Length: 67
Image 1 (cartoon, rainbow, N blue to C red):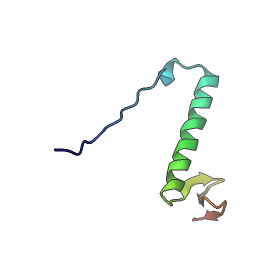
Image 2 (image 1 turned 90 degrees about the vertical axis):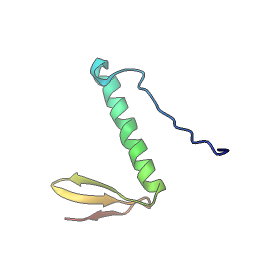
Image 3 (image 1 turned 45 degrees about the vertical axis):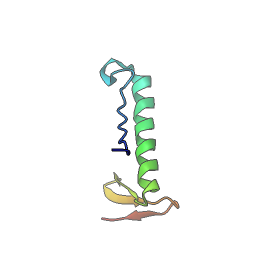
Image 4 (image 1 turned 135 degrees about the vertical axis):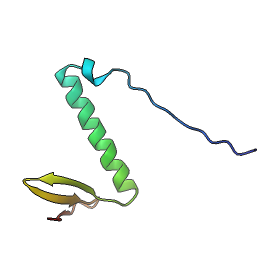
């Protein structure tokens, strides 16, 4: 078999339970940003709840209320 499949597995440097409040806040922001970047890279909107409504945020900046 000439083609190899490479699997990359990451490990956290520090467990969230051992982080202080500031570290946990920064970590949560980084996770949210990575998720947003990934969704936009595959052409999908970021869907979340805001002020009791479900909204979809698109890469071009549009924010649509779904319900």
